[in-house]
Length: 91
Image (cartoon, rainbow, N blue to C red):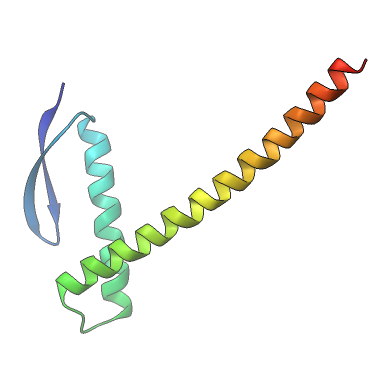
């Protein structure tokens, strides 16, 4: 069952509905704020909107990189499973 959560991003309170627990929603909010702050620390005169957009792009890049790593690991695991199955069937 979804519930309403209140988070703060860029000093703005937002209400959102989520199936997740409060701790999870707050952890995500904290993570996003941290990513925005990292951009603002590097680019001192950036607007909050541009910092938020750049943080989104950075997070999307991290996600895409992790998906590629995950796909590579799945491929390696599949090959190992195939080798194991081959050895088991040939004994």
